[in-house]
Image (cartoon, rainbow, N blue to C red):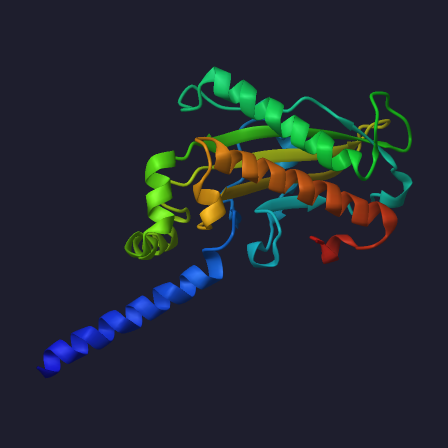
Length: 244
């Protein structure tokens, strides 16, 4: 009898721990993830060697670089280049989906930056150039995904899977690389690699196949525009990023 009681206590303790994990991470539509290695997609080229790990717990992207000599306040306009998809022969993302994701991402970037800056097409001393590449994307499994975040028992299983694999069960997501340069001189101002996965919220569960990837792109676009605005207005320093 005592043995059975001990087993029940152990199960209850584990359940409580998992519930706390769900409370802490289960409500986000999009969750930032770490980037485990320096990218080799070729998009950033030699600039990839400048990247250092960001603090995910503080909302920073997985890898990032800021030029210490950048004069942020001189910039008031931005050129947004077409978003590209960088993958190798083993990528599971079909060409039509690659095009759709890239098109969506550029639209999200233009929407967010247009609220903060003038978007232009000609280089000038007060203009920066933003280049973004999608380097990894995973589709969600819509039907099974919905079950995993709504049924209580599956939510517990989902928490275990998330802690073990760094992603939600049946969740999709996206990894992207970015570089920001002075449009007139080509000087590198900033570079980053960010990875985001679908969270465990009910809202996130109702997404279409690429819904998590779209949420990640929306998140990255808003964060990039907000942070750049903070730097150019003096609201925040690099050390104080990200800002909400």
